[in-house]
Length: 373
Ligand code: MRU
Image 1 (tube, rainbow, N blue to C red):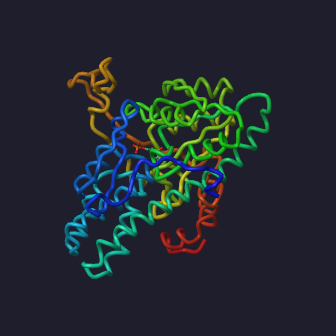
Image 2: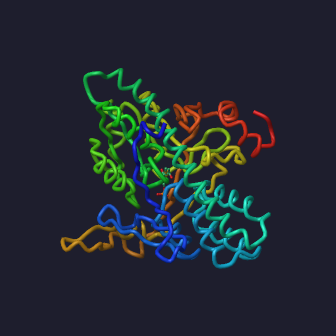
Image 3: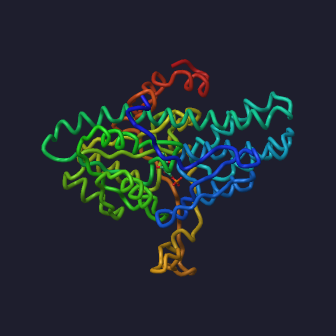
């Protein structure tokens, strides 16, 4: 299946350094799209800072980065106390993407029963396993999503398929391929003409990361202000919307980047299909519905200042709102399940409702709800 996709770039590199020490490097996403800068994570603190500051971001990548953060921490101290402290520290970095808690839970389940001297090596192995599984799951999402998009493209044989996405759910947000962008990459590889409307995604502008990714892949796209999305959808200039997810509740409600829900409302009004692409690690069946999902409220500075690049190449921040102005910066919203055409996971497309999700992911459902599908 991976062959259909070819190689995908990665935002996280692993290996051994010259002294044969385990090495983790990340592509610093706070520098993109202006500068490609790789950073080495040396400690648990580095990993926690990278997640909190969004040097790494996107639900699947946050999960993998947390797993590596735990491995870095245990390389220094593998005692029970250190394991508990590392878990608590990493869990506190970002609250909405459940992949973080999922990855930490998996690491703990694997490491806790081991004697401390066996934990460091096991932690690296488990973190690598989490990363490689994510790459495979996303490749599978791409294959399933491509089939859906192929069907939509067949309805418009004389023009490119018009897609819209929000935020960045590409390879930068995962280990490989991405989630919402994986089907788009696969369709492009199959030489089906397409064009992507990329919304800027204020205030952190993750849309610029998506535009950067698509430009590198040679995929036609156009950047729009977030507020242009409704106009384009109501003008019938969008055939489908694809987004990623940070957490999906048992009833199919989806938490994703702020602004997702407005696109879903416009799409539903116009009967435009609205797809959510996410690996099963993004499901949280312990939560009945989206109202229970914690929404991260981020620093005011993200609204007060904006980043750009000066003529000399220096990345600069410019104030646009005074300190005296009250601001509110929720980073995610909840798209109700009723607005979602399907959730595309590694197991294929699934309706966004309790019964369908239970049947689609029976093991996770049984584990998290204590009930059979
Ligand atoms: O705040 P971010 O940039 O981490 O938010 C990312 C998103 O909301 C993505 O759409 C989601 O994590 C899916 S990423 C494959």
